[in-house]
Length: 368
Ligand SMILES: NC(=O)c1ccc[n+]([C@@H]2O[C@H](COP(=O)([O-])OP(=O)(O)OC[C@H]3O[C@@H](n4cnc5c(N)ncnc54)[C@H](OP(=O)(O)O)[C@@H]3O)[C@@H](O)[C@H]2O)c1
Image (cartoon, rainbow, N blue to C red):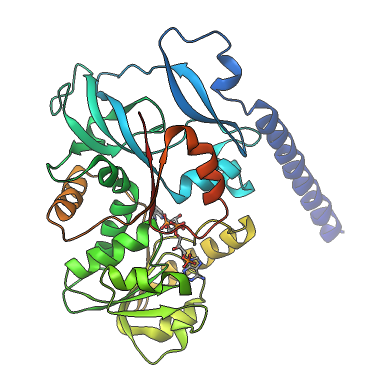
């Protein structure tokens, strides 16, 4: 009797949760809108900007030129670059929609990496003045102008070009902070899985600049590229599985996370660290992403009990790190791998090409 009552109540609770989720999903889906739906009047101060008002649809539109807040800098954009996250958000995989808008993207702006000239500053800004050449991170950098927080920008070093500078921020910070997370030391054996994308090409060179011995994992067409940027050894993943080799590594810098935890443990030294950077490049399905995220989270939680560590991290905006990256490039220790430079008007087509997958280095957009 008691058991039947318990079952009845459990069923009711689950049905209630299901209905509540259904209603929340319905409201979330139909309530999901963005500024494209609201801005129907012509902008008073127009500028051109790349927009995705709907998932999968990229356009160039006339929008209102932004005005800097008190702690912000208004930048006349000279160059911007594209990252995995920009390309993948536009496609709107269901896992991304849970965070960025169910039916439509909440924020239709495109781009994060920016290089350009300061046009105006908010009243609390102390580090920059109009005319300064800067680079860093600004939401909506694929536009004539963009506003950035003062703490997300640094001065462009004299011998770094605008093209190089725009290629640095997100990929460079991710590589530098990830290698530090793995406690990079001179003489260590570091394996970089996914060595030829935006993050990987910076990671190979930064690891070399720390004095590490670098093994790069990439596909056949990129073998010569990773050699040219300093990798000591190259593993072509279409011919060889790095987890089955005899070599042991002090650090695996994993941009792809496509191997099981046991496989990666097998090639890590007893006190080695696997830095869980990303889930691979374009073409990853939402279910693959969920599976890899779950596996990574479990691996990092359980590794706190052992000597081999699996560590997650999220890239943070840090001016000192941006300045260090600028110096590494200015001094020639690191050279950004820019596979493609395109004109602003060609951005929708370039995003379409990048969406076919297997990015190589960085793609930079020049803005006249
Ligand atoms: N932790 C953070 O805060 C953070 C910040 C930024 C980015 N990320 C993540 O870092 C990852 C890399 O970003 P990215 O900008 O470098 O992406 P990307 O430019 O698209 O590069 C992805 C790379 O993955 C390689 N790849 C794909 N399948 C592979 C496989 N089976 N084995 C080895 N390599 C493979 C590709 O090389 P081939 O063409 O040779 O296959 C490509 O070089 C992404 O997952 C991104 O989300 C994380």
